[in-house]
Amino acid sequence: MSAELRDRRGRPVVVVTGMGLVTPLGWGAAANWSRLIAGESGINSITRFPTMGLKTTIAGTIQSQTGAPYSAFALALEIAEAAADEAVRQSGIGVTGRFPGPLFIATPPSELEWPQLARLVAADGGVADPGDDGGYQRLLAAARSRRFDDLRPHAAFASIADAVQTRFGTIGEPLSICTACASGASTIQMAMETLRRGEAEAALCIGTDATVHPEGLVRFSLLSALTTRNDPPEKASRPFAKSRDGFVIAEGAGAVVVETLEHARARGAKPLGVVLGAGEKADCYHRTRSKPDGSAIIGAMQKALADADISAGAIDHVNAHGTSTPENDKMEDLALRHVLGERVRDVPVTSNKSQVGHTLIAAGAVEAVISLLTMREGVIPPTINHDDPDPDLALDVVANTARRASVRTILSNSFGFGGQNVCLVLAAEPS
Image 1 (tube, rainbow, N blue to C red):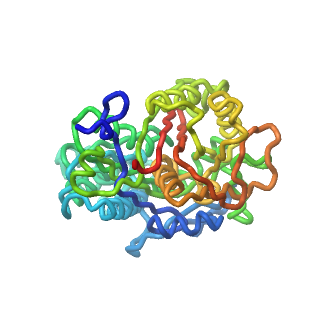
Image 2 (cartoon, rainbow, N blue to C red; image 1 turned 135 degrees about the horizontal axis):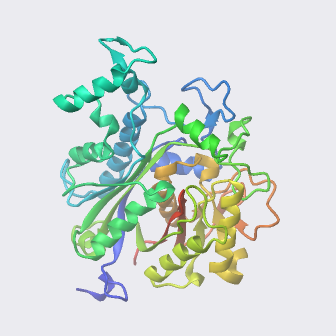
Image 3 (cartoon, helix red, strand yellow; image 1 turned 45 degrees about the vertical axis):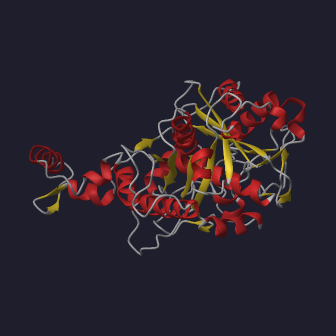
């Protein structure tokens, strides 16, 4: 094998040959990119359900293209398939319904939605009395008879993965991943490691989330994680600004096709970028909070750089996790100071969440696609609403207006509840 097809450690070089994107800014990578570099926001007032009595009434929602009533399960599947279809088509890999590799997909924890819950509590075709155990008895009866096909797709964690595999014909058992808000990045990490081990030559990676519903909003509100700056919605997400007060929940999907460089070249595919490395580190500190000293975040970044076999000095840009919560942004600044050292004030940093909101499970995949576009186009999307920089932070935030720059290597950070942290090192296409 030619030396350039392997890295300095003798591992196969892993490249991206296709990417797809759906966010509140639009359907497709091109539609998203034009609005990203224009500094536009995809955050709006929620119209999907009544918000009276809620402290937060804004989100980054996506309207289904099928016209069907909202369902978190159905919309997450729809946008996952749309992003994957775009990525597979761009890659030109395989044939329709026969993808020559495994599927790694990040999806939210699955649960029954209100229509299914209503059916569960229905007794003899009517609505159960509050004290009635009709729903429980129906559940027992369904379990005994195994007649629960109408409920299973909405409660089985792997059901979205099964549906995507059926459409795209991926090889082997699909792997569903949920590492909180690091999940999308985890799919790319796991695919890279699979290809390096020689277990596959190509893989399809997807992160998807469509959980802007009352329960989701209330849960994050109770954690004091969401912004309450509702008016105007587009000004709410303010990563690294002094006035930041919480994140904006949003929906989205990102997908990439990854291959070994040897496999891509053999079929004449053009690489769009390289997955140089990934680092992962959990801190096991708290159910939702990260360890205040940032040690786990620092560790994830350092492990990503070590895995990529580069120094911190090679990083041209950081696509930050940047949620717009006071604690997260401060901790990411602390970690970047430690990792980048004196260069921390010179490396441009941006947070896509200022424009698309926090897409939760999908965020790592969504931001990986945007990072690849940044390198290819030579433009760094802005962190909008950065009108009052936090003087306690040392970062060179790309504030409000896109910045032209030659970007060859990007550190893309994803930090999740429970201290689940994954960082990716992405590079421009190989020569």
